[in-house]
Image 1 (tube, rainbow, N blue to C red):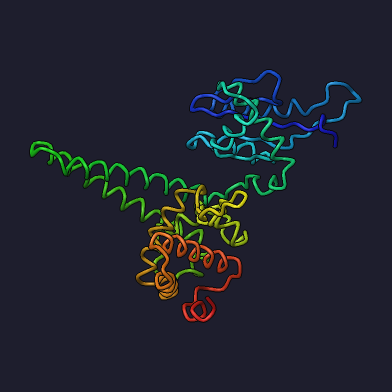
Image 2: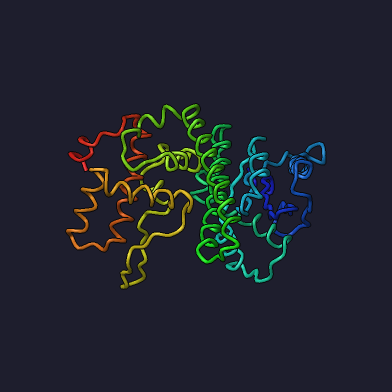
Length: 333
């Protein structure tokens, strides 16, 4: 198919509006970020594919790129993906770096939408284009992800109240303590809902890692909700996706230290806490950690390596369908 017959859509997302560009030079479409606006967005994309002249060849949407904008992009992305369109949700830093590389120093919604359209064209022609396509989450994952977000919000509020209590005056403490009790109660309810949801929708997957010490209910929920690719990717790909893969930093004769960065922060934070527990109670991870320390590795480096190993094992278990077995894993490190 000729390049002129392909459409690359860029959508700049904000809380209240969506700015769509069908190329990197033409006019943009400004619509509201709600159900009505998303329906108009889909209709406009479909209209752009419709031939105007009788003998004109229909155009095809090859890639739609949106920036991850704190969840404000989620409804539009899911709606377009549900309609069978190729959607990619990209990190804003990557999009901004791409814009700077093209010389776009100014920043407006229209400019960002055109840049994202250009970015969509580039990603489509890259070898990673297929990997970046969004896969529609099932209803169970959507609901579990929503519960995870709500629990995180409640925990953050509880931490804020705990911090206030530590420096509060006597007259304030009764109120702060009452709020903390309410938050603890709500967090407990959310965790019960999460546990029930896991048992109902993810019993088969969780049975495989049930004997893995260190993997608690919150970690299980995070893996099922925020890392649906677990078990479908290679160990290198899943490690990069989470952000625990050591990346080269070499140039010429300079050989820099291997570093980890990027990835899904929520999953990585949960995996970190699980790894700390596993280093104490999980014989496989504890043995691996002790071996790294005995070789002179820094504790921080050893912990990240344990995170990487734990994630790799979980990915292999989900892929193979064979449950966690301490003895097997110790004999086959």
